Image (cartoon, rainbow, N blue to C red):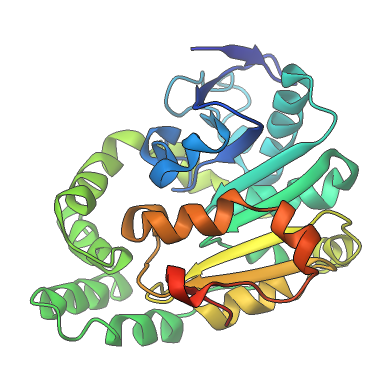
Length: 302
C-alpha cells in the first residue's frame, strides 16, 4: 500500500487498482474509505484506478489533533489532491469523484484548472457550485420506487430523518433508495458503511466557510478540461435535472444519465457505467461538447 506525505505532514494512503492510464478516484461519504469503490464495476480493466483514502479514513492517517476538525473541511483537502498529483509525477490529472467527493473535485478544478486533464463526476454533490439536492428532489426519486416491497418502511425512515429522529437502523433502511436493486451487493455496501466512514471528519467536511459558490462557478466556467457528469435516473441526489445544470456550468461539460441506476451506478449498471466512463475523455474530443449517452447501453442524454 503506497503512501505519501501531504502539505501538513499527514501521511495519506492510496490504492492502485488495475492497469493502464492513471485515473485518480476520490471517494464520497463524505469521508468514507475508498474501499467501497472497488474496481468501479470493472473500470479497472481499462484504467489504473488510484483510489485515495482521504485523511482520517481507510489507511490514511488523521491530521494532528491541533488541526482537527478544521483540517477535515472540504476546502482544506484540496491541497491533499494536489500533493497526490505531485507525488505521482503527473503533469495533469484525470480525476473521478463520487457523491460528496464531487465537492472536493469542484474545488480542485477551480483552484488548479491547469492541473486537470479531465473530470468525471459520478452522482455528485455540488453545494460548492450552488447546486443542492432538495427534499422535493428526494421525494421525486423515492416515488419512482413505489412498487418495491420495502417502500413503505423506507419512506417512513425518510420522515424520521426529517423529524430529527434518525438512528443507525433508520439510516440503513433509508439507504435502500440509493440502490436500483436491494440485492446482496447493495446490502453489503450499506452494511460496510458505518466502519468505513470517519464520523468526526464527515461532520466537519461541509463546515462553515468551506464554499464560495459564486467564485467557484466563475472559475468552472473557464475550465478548459472536458467534464463528464454521470447521473442515475433513480437517484435523488442529484436528480438528472440538477446534474444537467451542473454539466452546464462548464465550457466543455457533458451529461450521461444511466437509466437503471441509483447513487452507485457502477453497482447497479456496471456495463453501462464502464462503457460511459472508460471512453472519456477521448469520446468528448471526438464528439464535441454535447450531452452524452448511449440508449442501447442503458444511458441516455438528459
